[in-house]
Length: 394
Image (cartoon, rainbow, N blue to C red):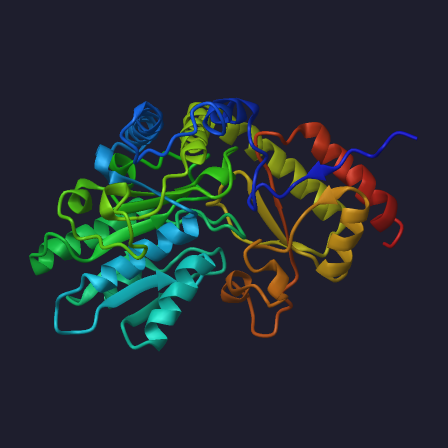
């Protein structure tokens, strides 16, 4: 009997590593295995690979060579930008950190920890029913003691896109108003945005940008924090991991050469395919939504018109998401209930809670997310299988 093909619709959680990326990484496991810190030829070969990867990424983000920092994950990169900003705050008044209520846990929980420790004043920006932050509220809460504003570009659970350029302008205008060249800093987590939108500093006008290789066909265990010249030339970033002083002293630890090489390769391939893939996946997204709502007509879509092409989250009205996701998995279809980082916690999504239409609405979201390996046939086969079980229950 022929084995049923599994269909993966959870690209927002992670992606399969591209074959080209694996090929680029392989020599650095055995042949070119040197420590970049060593002075002999093995070490120099490894350091040349790290420098080459850094240069490629600097060109993609249009930043300085020293403005590219390799971390163990996007979570670490987000921790670094927040904690470092707080550690470097020299003013007498406690630093204010402004984030949205729908940030990734690596931003939200880090800020909450610092607030509990009494190190920051935390301001949470609300979002509307489409998951978009309030620019009016942002203008109201900016103060002279604001050290950092961190707003994600694309939300990982519902795909809502924030007006990053407008946010950057609001912050820039505020700096001029208070005659400040440095604070408040503006950081954006662009992990879910990079594959489909230009994330260069020239475009976004941010001070720091986070991305991750494993969301775009690269390996897990490597994240990138990029700085604008406003930060990279002022030495106002302090490490949260200390030791041998690697990564210009910002992040100690022997460089993960193979993952760094794989990261640069995956980001480069993704950037080249960005426009074509964005158009292709938007069509798949529409097809998925149409089929889902046909099968479950009382359900409704989270988010609105301003969205990324690869994420769709639908409130399932007909049955519990746990029952649905379990049955879908038995049918060979991998979907999710939201962020993979908190999926095992079994708690209600903080993103969907913030976007609730009315008090008491059930939070029963099912997320599908697509990527470079998703095809039209995958969507068609998904609903062919789901219809066998759920079509009979209507």
